[in-house]
Amino acid sequence: MNNYEKMIDELRNGEVQSIQLSKENFLEFRKVLIQDPQFKHFRGEAKQGGDIVFTFLDNART
Image (tube, rainbow, N blue to C red):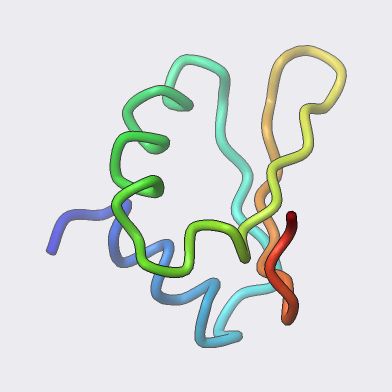
């Protein structure tokens, strides 16, 4: 399990409230995230400056 998979698991399990990534790491992280069976439960929000904050939603987004 690589670091991104561990981060995703921690977010899903409620061990962390959010994950913040720099725009430089986004594409590599996204490749791992879209493989997750609960992909639609993750929400990414772009912040000023290009950082992205991911949170986990109880209900899948549409």
